[in-house]
Image (cartoon, rainbow, N blue to C red; front, side, top):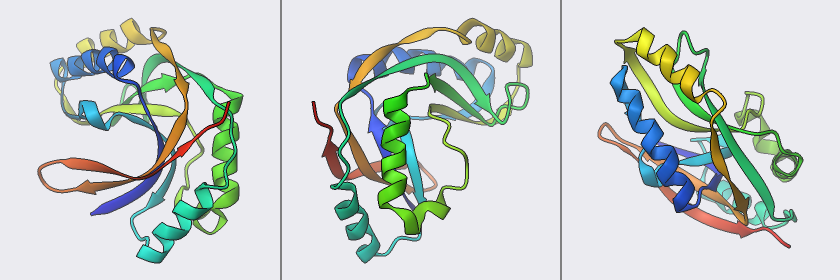
Length: 183
């Protein structure tokens, strides 16, 4: 199955520090850890039902976005729907006007697809999808330890239109187009 989304990729130095923390999740749960090369911050999920024509329309529409280069601060670890009933463990992204501004521009140029993304925009980086938890105490300690941890700051110079392909074995990501931000 294919899904389409718009995302920010992380620089390799940030990915290395984040990935080492994410690996600890298997100490208290059976989970699917997001692979090193697939870590990203989703800006907008478009779903899986895009025709070839719609893919080309998205590529074209995103070219009109004019946003300046900005910084993102990564801080803290949490879970959806909650830490007690974790299904997704995520790394937090500090609120940022430029980040929300970029998302707003994306929404503006893709109005027919806006309904595909039904959730409020909560910027985060998915580390793992939990299948089952076998040590709730260790999980609680993990969340407490990393609740306010600073994972670094990086400069966002571009964003990407991407496609994920999910099979029984793994999920792979393909960049369909990249868009540079301006100084």
